[in-house]
Image (tube, rainbow, N blue to C red; front, side):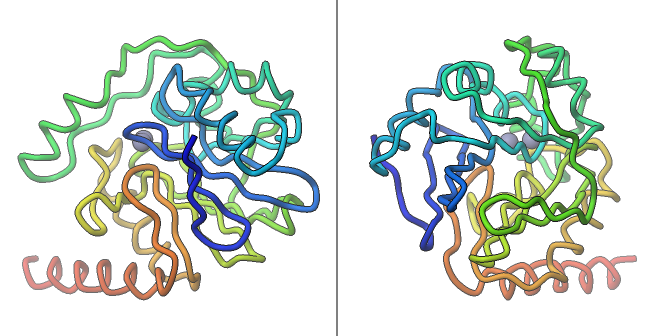
Length: 239
Ligand SMILES: [Zn+2]
Ligand SMILES: [Zn+2]
């Protein structure tokens, strides 16, 4: 099973249309997100590819509670016993396994189409229990320090995660990197989503990982700044 290094200590686990990430720390392995349902073998394969065993996965942190990020979570927890983390606003979706809060397609025709294609609020998944709620600005003592940044908009309980030792940001679905940096398929609240994109663009980091699209290994925060400060200027001109 392909496991691709992004930076020292971080590997991307390709899970079809969604990504998960493995962080190697002195305290074991941490997984960010859990892909679509039925993708647990990709995670176990990636762990073995690092010369480790599934029970060395100690933490499973979710960027948010959408089906393409929690789909294989129950199966992964069963096999590994990993401790689970999610923002409190999304915990009910994970622990019920659906339905999911509705979103509107991102601005533009493509957003509307993609949102219909890829997001099904009535989907039902195997529920996963969350052990620990996440709060904005806390630093989890995991893998040398992971800062939690609450970034609602696409999803009310979404968090971005900044792995401090490697200066890598896990952006979840605040934005995608499918055709360059861009919007996720939809938003629960567009204004909050724009504010969250700008908040991430105000941070300093080197690498970035996304729920969808390839990671960026270097100078990622420059690209965020170029994208969302330019966007802001355009919007101001249009207003
Ligand atoms: Zn999402
Ligand atoms: Zn997603």
